[in-house]
Image (cartoon, rainbow, N blue to C red; front, side):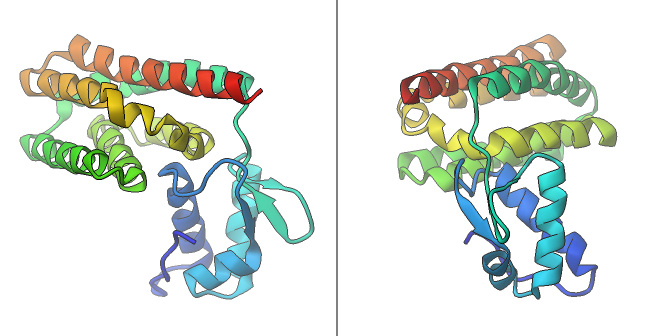
Length: 221
């Protein structure tokens, strides 16, 4: 269970929700994976009440699906859902990338370079969970630089739905390194303040992921 015990200084229900959602967004659970209230509570070192509250909130947001009295699953991705999420991501993440280009700091660009090194090392080691974690951090650091919190919330809601299926990008993406190429292009645009270049790189990254995931879904059918 890829969850850590919670700091009890804040509301346990809120912390449990944030921790579980972050794990879903980072792809630490696979599509179709089963979760129980008890397992989540044990992983977070909390009682079943905050764990249940977190699960219910994520069911409401579409990040989990109830399949029984005490069991939920990470919903499998369908081609229709992938089409919808991708179309919206292209608009929202492209928008965020554009604003980020105008507002990002040199420190944030340096952090992005460090994250890309983490991604490269993870791919070299075939450590795909680590690659996904750093990939999520890379994208969201760019989007946070846009300084548009409502836009961030909308983007995050899309990653809740798509995050678990990003596991299916590998090992192909580790071999082709197409995502690495897209990230390097985005970094180059951020350093020179080239808004169109950054937007194009992020949008290509989304489209490349879409093609791989769509191919995987069609093969599964």
